[in-house]
Image (cartoon, rainbow, N blue to C red; front, side):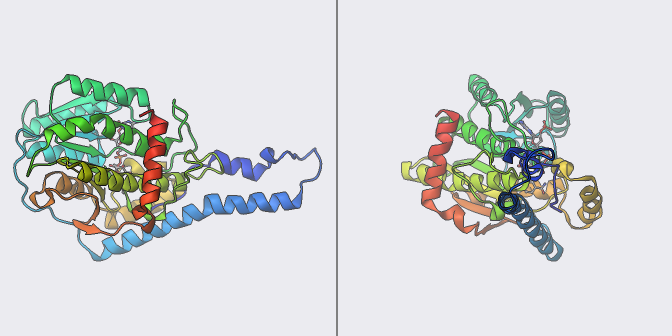
Length: 361
Ligand SMILES: NC(=O)c1ccc[n+]([C@@H]2O[C@H](COP(=O)([O-])OP(=O)(O)OC[C@H]3O[C@@H](n4cnc5c(N)ncnc54)[C@H](OP(=O)(O)O)[C@@H]3O)[C@@H](O)[C@H]2O)c1
């Protein structure tokens, strides 16, 4: 269940009135201003929270009535190379395991060396020595992303599949070393830069009838997302719910625009956004204690397992029927219509340009 996260700085500022220049000992508060800031808080914090809850309810209602998508038999992937970001645990680990099991060489890109070593030990024990490797990347740092991309190039390996999976949810207001809002940076911007830095490698590794594939892990929460192009870092009234939903919407917009460019250039690369449903992973660790307690029994019955959730990424990465298919949103094994705003070509282009500016491309 999607629920309230820790207190946000924006919310605190709005509620104490400190940012509005009055205090208990000072002059009386201006009631007009008070109501204006109250309304602003309601719109900026409460509305995204409710919209996200509603999305969560809809997904759970669907999961109550439908079984998890079952993977078809997938072709062997020997000779192909994949990068899975956030492959140390949760769905990323399951995706990496499955792809390695199909014979792919898998690079787990993550920011916890110990977790990374444990993940590759597990995968290599199951699929054979050398099938998986760990490489360090902190997706919240543009410098680290650039460093990772260069280190990967230096290996001389081709790149056939890039799974942009790493993510976080409902983090209290926080900035990265580059000054970006945390969800924006980790879930979207880091992946935007990584994909662009590896794009020529993906292009040269693909071929006719065997396109390279980019898989962007979005979420049903993108339906609740709004892109604030003039405040992407959510400096005005922070909402962790709004920030998460915005980052997931940005991934869909990015996928569609990227596919347009790849198709126009005739490159053998496809880009797909995937939605795993609601999956029982550590992603929900930032919920309030009470919400955690409520989530636990619901998750046991209605959430998907990490392996079930990962099947959508594995399908997009390896299924024969997905060859040459890009520019779409996959949910429960099927192409599904994403939010109306995600198809807006102007918004896609504006986001692309803004993102290039932000990461210095
Ligand atoms: N669970 C769901 O219900 C659900 C639904 C829709 C979409 N999704 C999306 O699915 C993706 C995977 O999430 P999950 O549910 O499997 O959650 P998870 O178990 O928490 O996995 C998140 C992964 O991201 C990695 N990560 C976090 N910060 C990072 C950083 N700075 N640099 C590099 N990697 C970092 C984590 O690695 P470390 O442990 O090393 O930090 C971990 O491997 C996310 O994008 C999430 O938004 C999840």
